Structure formats: C-alpha cells, structure tokens
Image 1: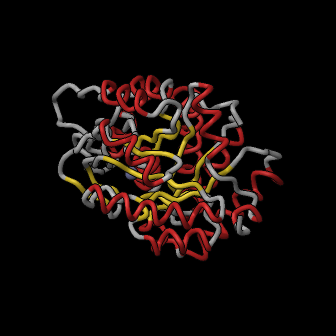
Image 2: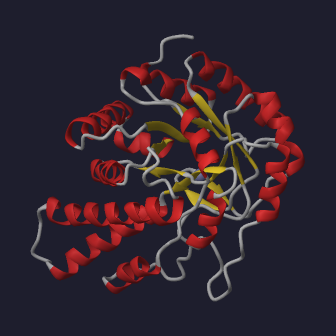
Length: 324
Ligand SMILES: [Zn+2]
C-alpha cells in the first residue's frame, strides 16, 4: 500500500462507514460544499449530532473554490471538529461525479479519501474500463471508489440528463465484479436539482422494486442514492416570498428516503436543499434589512439555518445521528 495523503489529514475512506450503515439500517449523509459557511454548517451539524459524514465536492466546486483552497478547507474542517468541537466523527473527503481518470488522480494526490468515477454517460463496456482504471489507481492508496450504473435526470453542476435511465439489475454483478468498485450509485427515480417532478402531479414513488432486485444480486454491497434533496416547501416559499422565482420546485419525500436507508442504501447525497436554505435566508435578510451590507449579517444566519436543516436530516431522515 502506498502512503495516502488523506490519512495525514485525519480523513478516512468509506469502507468502515458503509459497513456500519448497512448493518445498522441507516445512511451516511453526503453533503456538498463549495464555501466556508456551508462546510462550517456541515461539520457543526454532524459534530453536534455525532454523525459520520462525507463532505463532497464536484469538479465544478473545485473550479469555483480553487483546488488548493479546498484541500486546506477539508483539513481545516477536520481540525475544527477535533479541536473546537471536541468531536471524533469520521470524515470522508469525496469527489462527486468525477468524469475523468485524470481528475480522480488529481483529487487523490491532493488528499481525497474517496472518489466517484461517473462513467454512466458512456457505453457499458467503456464505463467498466474507465471505472476499473480509477479503482486500480485508487486502491493502491486505500482510497475507495464509487461507480455509477444508470443515469439520473436533472441538472447538477456539469451533470445534465433529460430523462432517467433506471439501473438494470442484470448488469450490477458484472459491473461490480469487473471494476472492483467499493460502492455503486444507482438510478431508481431520484434526480438532480430542485425541480425533480412535474408540478401539480403526485410525486412518483422511488422504484423500490429495482432496489430490491439489485440487493438480491449484490447482498450487503453499499448502494448510493444521488439527487436526494426533499426541497422543503417552507424554504421554497421563503425564496418566493422574498423576491425569488422558484415556481414548481419539488423533491423526494423524506419518508421515501427514510425507507431507503433501511436497505443497502448507505450513502445519500443532498445538495439542492442546502442551496435552497442559504438562498431563502439571504433573500429574507436583503428584503428585511436593505441597508445591511456586511456579508456576515446574511451569510451568518444562512449558515445557522443550514446547520438546523442538516441536524434534522441526520436525526429524522438518514438516521446517522449518534452513529459516529
Ligand atoms: Zn449526483
């Protein structure tokens, strides 16, 4: 095993975390960040609820925040948890939707403990070849790898698709066997972004039948759900009340996610909900205190509200509270 930078930073890979999640019937929160306030809210919420956590960045976030800055932010997050919050929660730094081998290598070199290689837009055989190449590199450093089969609809940073392609349960054993991935993201009806379903129509339930088939083929294997924001309507209304225009935003009901955590689903990605809260609170401050021009006066309350939401997710949706 080659020496991995992430271990020096105090990070862990996903292996033990996922074992605990599968055996315990809960899911690890995977929260995206690209600025300081989001990261503080995530670490604060997870330390307070004693929850393991995956902090993740997309390639878009890496471009936005600067890759060097991000690496030190992650290190700072670990130090803040240990020193200031006296918390030993395990923390994973994960690349969300890596699309090339080179990007995954670059992240591993800069201290990531887990990477996703998303080859789902490629033909099946190419997805296998790309994923295996990343796994072979990552495993030399004991970095864990998430692959993806099936395509989620919606838009998230650089990831775009018009419609779902559900994961084909007949492919999963072959894919996992040939690539050696440590976890698998699947498509069963969640989608990226804040506009997941058609307005005015009942939200279609997640395809638990497909999930069950996949579990039968891969007993005990860690499954990942992307695009799992619930788009709380109170925050949509807050955005709209204070001058926003997020008509028809709707997400995956929390009860369905709660049900999914009891299965082999052991990582649930939530990004849009955090964006929504932050935007709602900032809009409110701007309308109520138009003379305010200190960024701390609107980013601070946004951070507080985000922390509250994440505590709720850990306690009531993912079941990860108290599992660190
Ligand atoms: Zn995703």
